[in-house]
Length: 166
Image 1 (cartoon, rainbow, N blue to C red):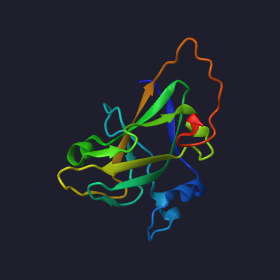
Image 2: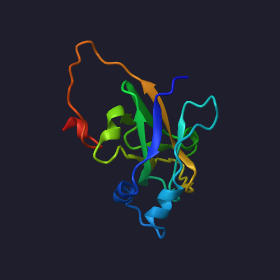
Image 3: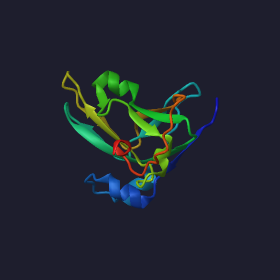
Image 4: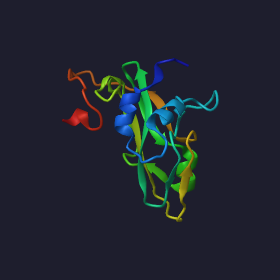
């Protein structure tokens, strides 16, 4: 297996800017408990992303999770974010953008490449989802990609969500 990336935390300052959830616990305390993504088994393709706090989603509800995580990866690779398979199967949990795409240059963005994940409980069976802080709720898979022979893009990213289309 080729090693092409490294997970890190964004700064506490960046996490505090992006967190935005009402909680009785300070963001510094939450930040200190954040775990870096990791694989559950040697054969796992996906790196589990862990919820920084408890959350509950009734059917139709959404939440944006500031993970406090960033990914530094080699050029030519992308990190794809998906809901955890079990949550998708049991609750029909979906990412609001279907698949999160974390480009290699996102790491250098003004927001420090902070990976934020917005999910929705799209349950048709009326099931409410509860995830405890520290539990895996999403997974990321690194994939290599190619470009066309005539690609001459020289633009440089300097922003987060939707910044490459501006």
